[in-house]
Length: 153
Image (cartoon, rainbow, N blue to C red):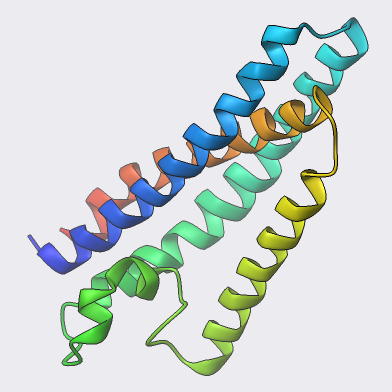
């Protein structure tokens, strides 16, 4: 077993899990306030859209395999800093070719912008989106855990 690769996987799961917890709690607040039938319909539609589009198509099929490949490649990497910061390396944020890092940092910037924009929305709209995003991230966590067994060991 490659401990550095597993550190990368654990870090990714903890990062995604933290976001699920934070977003999910805001979503639960929205549910506690009560949703109208159109709001329930929007929640269902957004959740299906986000789980399929972001969770399955973007995370499970594209991002997770690349992240796990980077984590597994740490096995032969002689540099210390990518090993110490293995989750960041797996995400492509450090110790990767500049194009990979640029795309990864652009993704982080897009996520930050989306979070800042979503903060402007009142409840229950913010909670509806947060629940849908949480569901997509849970799909990503499952993909990480399922695919990690085949890529890293």
